[in-house]
Image (cartoon, rainbow over all chains, first blue to last red; front, side, top):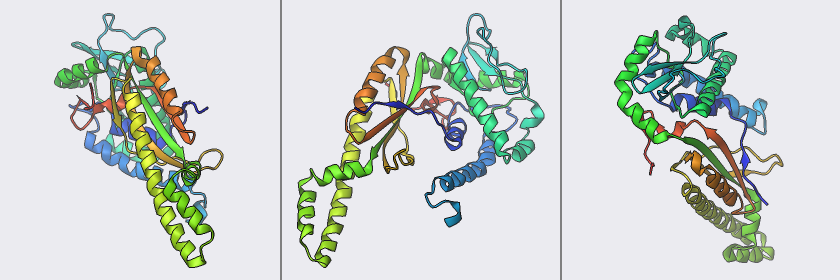
Length: 64
Length: 271
């Protein structure tokens, strides 16, 4: 019989999405503004997603 | 800053202090009114925009920092209901942080009252596609008829029948997945304070190589008192179909029930 299983592994992309795109946004004098944070991490996220997809590809990076 | 919680009478962190991010630094509570910000000291120069711009390109630095941030938020939430704060929220000093709490205190207090005694659970349902297709081939009359007709058909007609069957199979599969997602969502929602669907994500192939089709991804806000019922409900969902794989994450800090766009507003779907 099927049972619900606890999912343990959280990828870096999922984690980054969670901690950056969610949570309370405080206002005021932060050292890095919200807009800065978005700009800083958007490139990193894209890089991580691309690398994640390459790892999952059954043909592997050499064939892409 | 890792998170915001309601101010406790003692104003101190509980015993078993939580390690911060920098060596030797622990998480401290910075009170303002009825709120407490949970934060740790970090080298200010490391979080200047120019410096972060360089550091984020270092994958090991970033991964370490993000995973440590998440560890601290989860440990804090396990001790007391904590509204997580967006990653990289760094203030130059405590006065700046208190000024921020003062500005957002009304909405922060409302969020914390709504989240009191609650955890988030994320549920991921996926279907073993090949198994479900096999089941549909032998149970949906329209598909069964096409399978029969194709057996003795000449090559050209067999090709056309095959195409019709593929289309019908895909439609039937989509309907089963949609119905299953709706049934599972509502079953779980009955035992949660709030629930919302999340965008479906790619599901990697099963360990046995089977292709998994995403069915439902949803987040639920579950009060401590509801947890046993919610878990029992999750087990019921897992048995809805033999091709179904049911996974969950939690208890987690309630990230999905805070609307960042609204600036410290609680997301809808409550009640």
